[in-house]
Amino acid sequence: MSIDAKVESNSKTLVEAVDGTLVESASSWWRRLGQSNRSLQFVLAAALILGVSMVFVGSLVSQQIKRAAAQSAGEGAAIYMEAYLDEYVQELASARSLKPESVQAIDNLMKDTSLNSHIVSVKIWLPDGSNVYSTSKHATFYYYPADPIAAAMQGKVVTRLSPLEHDEHAYERSFNRPLYETYVPLREFGSGRIIAIGEFYELEHEIGSIHQQVWAIIAAATLAMLGLLFLIVRRGDRIIERQQAILRQQMREQEALHQQNAALQRRVSTASQEFATINELTHRRLGADLHDGPAQLLTLILLRLDELAELCQTGENDALETIRSAAQESLREIRGISRGLALPEINELSLDELLKLVVQRHEQRSETKVQLELGELPATLSLPYKICVYRLVQEALNNAFHHAGGQGQSVRAGCRQGVLEVQVADAGAGIDQARQAATGSHRSRLGLAGMRYRVESLGGTFELESAPGQGTRVKARFDLRGGDSRQ
Image (tube, rainbow, N blue to C red; front, side):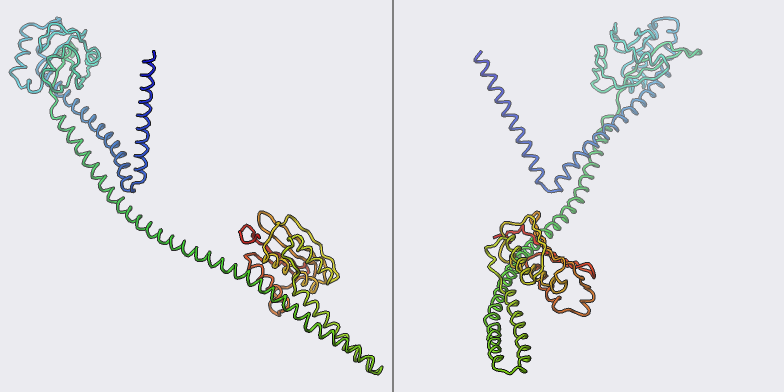
């Protein structure tokens, strides 16, 4: 039992190894075929398709040739048999056997006439299947061709390429050549009644050579078509290869240009952010200079005016009061400009705290109310984006205060799917943009241009929605999914 088990186990292992090797060989062959050029793939596919098609056509033509040859052989045999045998089988109309003289006459016909050049064997059957004559002189026939005799009894000529498969066919097989087997009805003179069936074996003439010629022609036509198609496909394949080489070169050039553009875009973005930082430093310095320079001088002027007012007469106080009012107004303007130019320390503030701070300062400075609506905001944001958002909201609220009287001021901000949107709106008289472009309000245009530049320098989009009597809405969107927007 253990020996049998080992043998079975080793057999299974061997079969599995052979199957695995065959599968691996087949898969590697398919991989090599897939990696080959298109011309070879086409030739293999065309050879398979044309080969199957031509085999089918060749088989069909061969069958047609065989049928035509068999029909021709049957018709010729029927003419021969009716001409030579009818007079010798008339006695079968009233008897069940042939006379010895008739048998000898038929034998002489097979030997001495031209019949033997076509017919190699003759058998005569009665309608009930009894054999009354045979060239081979077999005493008894065990094979009874019932179907052909039945068809011949209906007046048909039956011809087929004989398989020569029975013992009674030993004489016919001795010729060692294909033979046509034909059954012809033999009729009684006068009445036309079928009295016997003649079976004849005829040599197949030139059928084999015709088959060879047919297959040679089909093979030549197939090879010619394959060659022509290969030349056409090969030419197209070379054109495709040249075009692919050109496209690959163009793709490499496009990739190089894309990389250069990407590098330039990064440099532009970096330069824009650095410029924004430098611009803010410049604003801060201007604010400090205004605060420390003109503001201090105006303060000194106001103090000296107070001293002069005490020394001047009563009639001259009106002029001093006018000068004092102008100086105080100038001081307030300079301090306001200074506060606007100097940013608070926003680096440590979140975007939420930043927006609350700019709104609070505007409310304190303008003594107006601003509606603030904050949605989900990013937890971290780089300093250039914070500065841009602060200046955008600051300038938009200043415009709303100066041009809309602070009516309906609102600030909305939120971030969805990595896109930050900031919106500032008012309910003022709106802007007639066509009229503004024609007449020009330099302050408004510079303010809007500055906001647009700040937003677009960071890769954002800026939108202005306004119409007379419908208020003004400023929108800015930033795509924060890039890596440079986060701290």
